[in-house]
Image 1: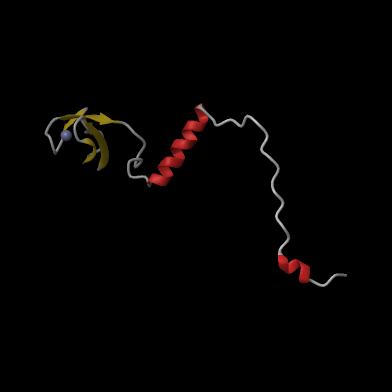
Image 2 (image 1 turned 120 degrees about the vertical axis):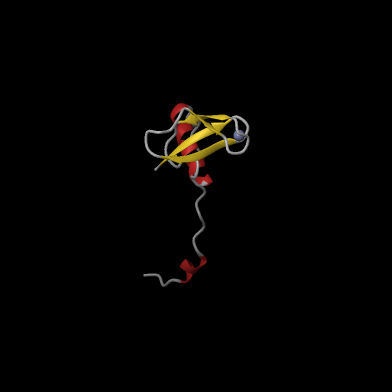
Length: 91
Ligand SMILES: [Zn+2]
């Protein structure tokens, strides 16, 4: 069995399991009984965790519209020494 994805104009995307090579172009939506068009997508992307999906979207966007730095960042503030370092024995 293969999972095929369809998109109903009213109800959104849904999956249908059918034998490989038997998926029609349109499939009847189980909720509204209208014809839903077949969608071709990478497998299991609809069930991806939202954090991973957001990271992949940022990666995809950076290919076409990368965020560009227009000036040199300021100097890093130096951290004050840890108080315990003053109590260490000196050579
Ligand atoms: Zn529907």
